[in-house]
Length: 294
Image (cartoon, rainbow, N blue to C red):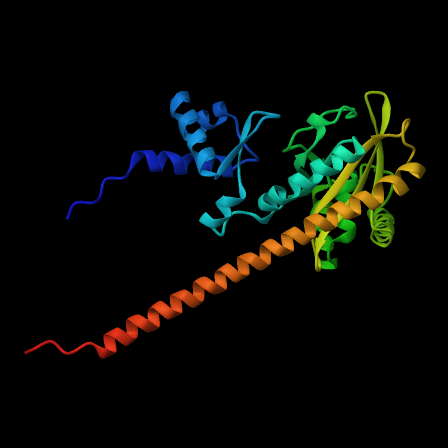
């Protein structure tokens, strides 16, 4: 028996989805390089996937990214990607209120990966970052915020990895155990106060980043951040002004993630129930079927 010939258009579409899944979005040129197809063909595939709802094009950086619908295709679709889909409207809403750039980041290896940011629409952004920008765990507000609110086992594991990699601290004059004690004290303070605050020089001006966790039960999903100029908004003024708004936004994202998980669980339970009903009906028909005449 001859094997069925593969549908080339479907194979190309799946190759495109796989290429997008390997990175935080991709341009047409990057997909062309990845799957070795003509540019016009790749463009048509991407636009078709957009029409189907599995991909969207970000007008800010002209990159194509996966949408939440991809989650239904495979259990391999990571939680952080659909968290970003849920979080996006809320961080843009917050940006319209505070004007300063807002972003959401999730852990990726030993860094925090910016999943979505309003930099390109904020007139007050000192430097404009795009989704996919990475910041270190131990020297950034979102990284310290994540570490401070992670479970003890998660925190120990990440710190051990960073210790072995030589990245925890560049102050070589201090012993490793002294650095660890100081870091533990910093993380305890962040956990108690509920936020992390860090400043750094950007183009000759001091920029401050304020981060709060987006947590569901005992799991930290992401860090929600706002960046602002210290010369315009000193930290003593910024914390009471921005912190309640950041926390409220983080709670909205958390609640919608929780609702999504409940909905997914209900869908899974319904599908299991329908499958069991079908199997029982099939078994009943088999049992009650008359024997074939001899």
